[in-house]
Image (cartoon, rainbow, N blue to C red; front, side):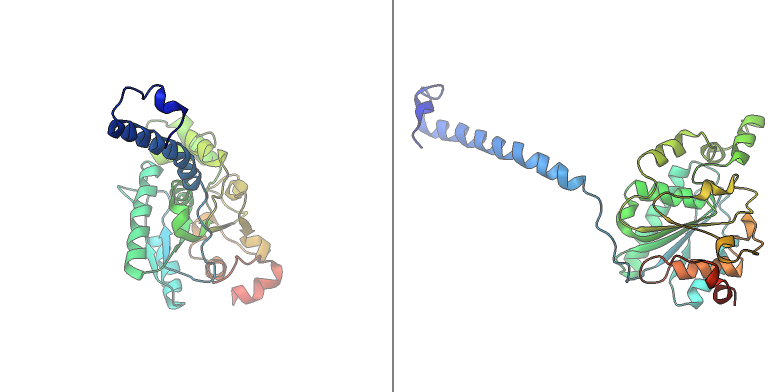
Amino acid sequence: MQDGHSGGVFAGLAPARRRLIIGALAALAVLAVAVPVTLAVANRPPPAADQNRVGPVLLVPGYGGSTDSLRSLAARLVAAGRDATIVSLPGDGTGDLVAAADALGDQALAALDRTGAPSVDVVGYSAGGVTARLWAADGGAALARRIITLGSPNHGTTVADLANSVLPDPCPAACRELATDSDLLRRLNAGGETPDGPTWVSIWTTQDETVTPPDSSHLDGALNLTAQSVCPDARVGHGDLPTAPLVQQMVLTELGAGQPVPLDATDCTALSS
């Protein structure tokens, strides 16, 4: 190509070298345009999962990591035809919740590889719900269809506040992270409580004695349900949430194909039978 620049800065160069430099400059110009486009694509939210196609269910234990409380819920899911796995947390389940989220991520990938499903459903009980949210915020949202937090201290619990103030040394990492003023929860809740990709449901009980106040379980952007909003006379404590037949049926209903179901008192009889 002949232009006014050929006699300027490139005048003393051999034609082959001149073509090489002009080609390199053209490539840099293309790269300068391509990089912002690539970053824009990378920052896009994950595509919404197909709500009508259910996959394996991962059940995330609460503080302490005990899987016993989730066994009957897992059995109920299997009896309903779902693939259900209780997640094993590192250590004794009282360590850093970020490490627990990493373990959930590994087991979610294993479940997808094993089943060939395009997405997973996650039910996080108590602190397990915070673990599920951490995983979702760190990229797991792209792998999930639905995430249910079950009696989770999404905004902390004053029980952890008390433990941290009275006995700070024995209060392990997860205990400190579940305090109402913890840095972890502040960061987690600051950027939007329910990342795009999956649909979200939060189920809890107004009679919770461990997550205090109980409405700490409320999750912006989720379908929020209490056991008492469905059955006003329900007596359900924090430890009853994974095993109470009413709550189990609520969980199974919300894990079904389609969008989350806005349950109310008219559903009490059907869900309690």
